[in-house]
Length: 337
Ligand SMILES: Nc1ncnc2c1ncn2[C@@H]1O[C@H](COP(=O)(O)OP(=O)(O)OP(=O)(O)O)[C@@H](O)[C@H]1O
Image 1 (cartoon, rainbow, N blue to C red):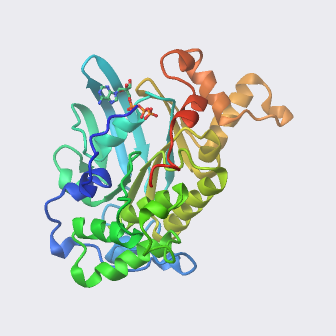
Image 2: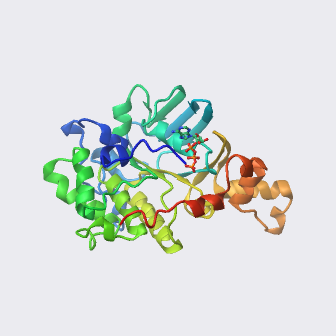
Image 3: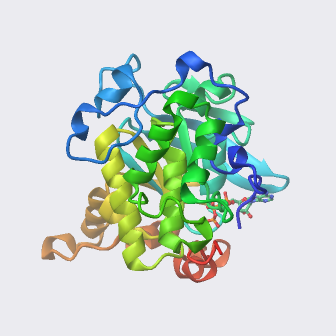
């Protein structure tokens, strides 16, 4: 299991590292806007100025990767969780960080979000150093952790409004921004019901709305669909995709579900024992293994899970568990109520 340093009822710690900020300067608070590509998408809180102009906007840091990790290492005592991680997530892509239990995904994510320090190596978010510019990094992020970040005793609207306050969304804009975030995940009709009446899929979408209310440029989702049924999983992904299309935000997601990564991620990194063992588009990785096995020419492409087993070998089952183990041990659908 991953460390839960975000427990308790403080949404600032559980829902987004940016929420730890004691104050985003009023002048820097993102305003409601719609990207130019958003005409057919949901009304999503987006940033003013260049950031609001949709994918690949001419931002001052155009061309800068959303996330760069170089030689990132992190250990819990004797346990090496991340072991020299090399990773680049491009601006605007949906990037999947895949791996079995204990691969180091959550630890890496927590370093990227600045919830953990970077004891060795370097992490940058849109060019900002995660060690020296923590607040600048946090202002760019929306983070949906594995742990529950919705309060079952509040309505959906109150949950999102709480995050809006934590993120210093101005009082004048708050109600509209909360409404947009809820609408973006199709929770308008359920907005005034207590979260404890929500299904697991609705809870996950509510957590998405909480992260979106700050109009992040980088949305980080740790196991967004774990424990959900196939319909709810599809729904969560459809909402992630719609928001991404409307805003051009970068999405970094961890998942055990190889089929989801194959379907929804532009590129994936397969992580095992603290390191990236393979990186590319799902097609590149599957085709590469098919060619090595000599089956590609028959049109028999392996699955991403085959690719991972090829890389991790027998090590997958002893120290790290298996994908199916995780599916059966995590419960998201019943977390609220
Ligand atoms: N707070 C902690 N204290 C001690 N060891 C930890 C802590 N958090 C994680 N670890 C260990 O670090 C390693 C990497 O864990 P991490 O949670 O980052 O992996 P993961 O890939 O996210 O796994 P999962 O899919 O189960 O969340 C594991 O060996 C884990 O046991």
